[in-house]
Image (cartoon, helix red, strand yellow):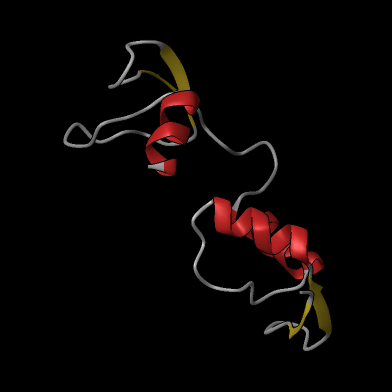
Length: 91
């Protein structure tokens, strides 16, 4: 069932529809969104300005395939390719 929520940034009401709720459940999100779509996009833009993301080539700790990640990995943590990361997250 669609839910009406209020954005913490702009104060406007927005709809948290069934499809979005289902997607969030599949991704393992437990909390409802706090921001409307426009404010979410604006927040992401503030924290991840376009063109400033550095990618690092790594070898996946699970399958051994080369992959690019948008961060500098630490030596004490495993790093996964997109496929293996998705498998780990869904478990």
